[in-house]
Length: 428
Ligand code: GAL
Image (cartoon, rainbow, N blue to C red; front, side, top):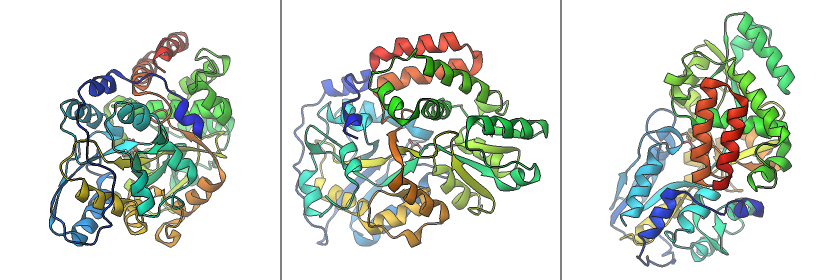
């Protein structure tokens, strides 16, 4: 997992700009243990607004307010899946030395090559020790939020990216079996298409959703070792395996809903919920959406399986929160971070969010069968970082990949796509 941290040498213009403006020295790394009276304000910045996103956050905020009624909480969420808009707003604020008290950031490159490299974060080593957390999170996860020998944020969840959710009734009515390989997937997709059902729902109004599909195709074709080597710059982006993945991706795009470009992830998940589409590849925040917002039942209304040819692999997306330098009230913010990293906080947030807890000692009985299965998979699978969610490579590279994917979805020109990816690799 150390590899994850060494993957990226360059970071994006956004992060570079942010780096230029920092002069503040921040507020130290001590925890005050919590419990005593506290006042002040905590501003929590994320992109968790609306359906399928905010339930977990609001529950966590309620819990915090119960414990600290005198601390004011501002929910400063900015709408847009995968941080499409929030990341730009955050960059502007960080650049203007106006950081939120704490903000959502993915472990891996987004944190370490971004805000840490830009000298915008306080180290949390002492805070982890004071909370007795060093053995409460998997070592790989702590590695993912560490760089330069320090720990920089607290993971609240682990989402899985290489999962396909499907409408069980639609599969049953059409005699479709759960596919495990690409060949089986295409067989199932042909059957569904012939029956007039959209095989795969896509909502790429924001292009990260299509990038997410592509990263899973890459993982399926390259396997976890070469997938990691690709983002470590050890395999070229015009490698024959990447070309094969692009061709498979193109084929998959032949099975999606025609109006994909006008839908966001929730709108596309709805197609599966109402049976117009059979499957969707979406991180398991979609499970939170199905269960908590659409009242669907796990393993009755919808089922799940690993993206073709990625069964033993787990694409990790971890949402974390840290302590920015230069904030006014680090004491209060640490109380929030303490809750976020506690068993109670994680077991309140994750069952609603669709994710599994980042802690190793959370209570599995709080989770549905999907959660329980995913906790098991997480323990046993090969873990790889997500590109689409900012962990595998720099924000600059990801921006270019999103652009290339966006063009590819419309044009379907494999040569152009590979060329665009190769050009982008200088940002990696
Ligand atoms: C991811 C994030 C998830 C979820 C998703 C959709 O980047 O890690 O928590 O919010 O975006 O917006």
